[in-house]
Amino acid sequence: MYAFARSIALLAVAVAALVVGSVPFLVAIAGAMVIVQAADAVIGGITRDRVTTVGPALTAVAGLATLIWLAIG
Image 1: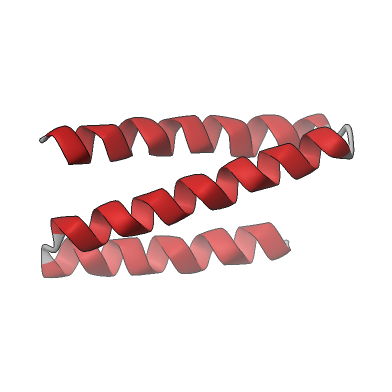
Image 2: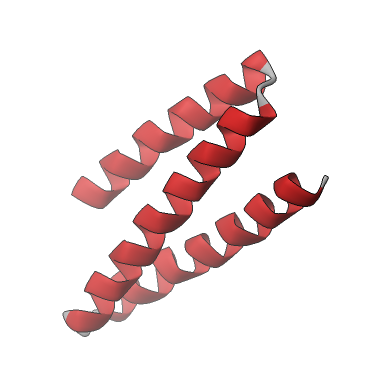
């Protein structure tokens, strides 16, 4: 639940950046989201919990792809 709450807070800030229209701010938030999700995946791997490994890992990959797309475009 802690990781979920952290991710929801970052998502709320990302949505605010979209509403305001600040691409650099959105890139910074996306980077933070990728780091948080990747760290959660590592912790899930250490504890050998598939759900807390795979879910955050997939979210981190999707976030990284979005971050690259934002940085290029």
